[in-house]
Length: 139
Image (cartoon, rainbow, N blue to C red; front, side, top):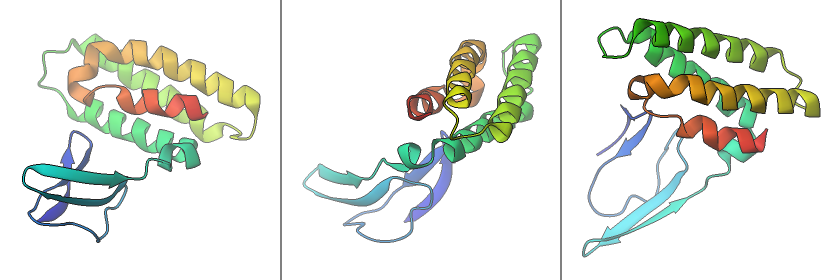
């Protein structure tokens, strides 16, 4: 059994035997094999380094969907609203930025670092900020 489930924002792959081929869309998984309670994973994690701006847009969109879709958590509405406004501003800056410009890259890194601080109170909604933290070193 394989699938692209929304499991904490990533792929969930389940099965038995060897999974050595197939399409793992948007996943760094290349192959998985194992026996006798030993598993070997082969991954390729160059996607963020190869396209940090594309990954940034995807991650910001994922965070925004989660924030806008959540109304039942224990997070204060003002924190959620502040986070949504900050994500929207980051999306606008990312879409308008010249990805080749060192100044634009630095500006986006600083915005993301500030955004992480704003997202801390809503981390339970968005599933953490590790995705953003993985992106900014490549900008």
